Amino acid sequence: MKDEYDFSHGERGKFYSPDAEFVTPIYLEQDVIGYLSERAQAKGVEIEELINDMLRRDIALVEAVK
Image (cartoon, rainbow, N blue to C red):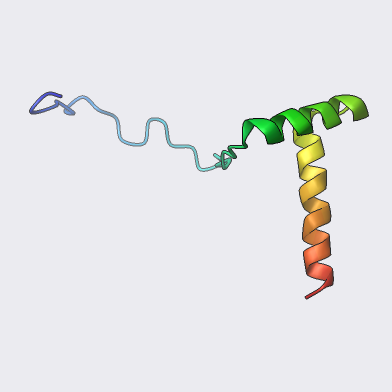
């Protein structure tokens, strides 16, 4: 790294977007990805849709026993 950097020509907020939405990355183990990929393919859906549906059902179960 340099000892100093020149930011005199920098533009504050150049890449700021108030509408930007942060998407939390989720990292799954390879065996889990493999299983879910097979299930998604068998159902004819995208893996994201399958995982979201599974998580929504889990959330509903948790909320039901509160």
